[in-house]
Image 1: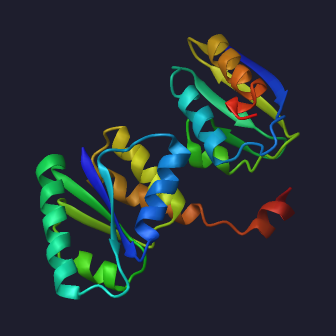
Image 2: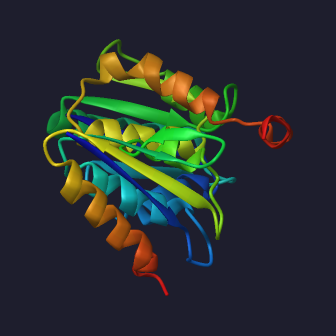
Length: 89
Length: 136
């Protein structure tokens, strides 16, 4: 009931405040426990202050893990958000 | 649900609230700013604050007041309206504190249960970047 993937942040500003809020909002729609990690730190994807502490800039490799009933959809939609550069560029 | 009122010197209250709303991408209808102009008349502002708090209590049951500086006029004024469980005041606002407060409000958590957590999250959010960099 878990899956994970890795993705590189490609948007210019990285995981900045508004991008983090979008990600947290999206993660909050799923029942699964979701974490986002950089090579150094790990954060609960449903906590905006947690996600911001990752301080993940452009080109950071993120690992997304989801554990729960909707883990697959959760990962897919988060990847889509990141690949779409958070709808910013 | 509780209301949130940001009370601070000059334009700070509006700036804090506008910035947090922009980040969250939400309207946050039960949160307001109460700016206190530098040259404001103390007793007039006190009356106006009382009125604002009364209105917020009527529509939200209780109010969380966030002020900028302990010992400053906005905090001193707000403190005169402190009512346990009804008008709670947290001073030393920072952006993480306000964002956390808005999220707690949205999630329907009771204000009393949120106060300690709010303080610790706001304190944790003050970070020495040097420690983060050296930890890497």
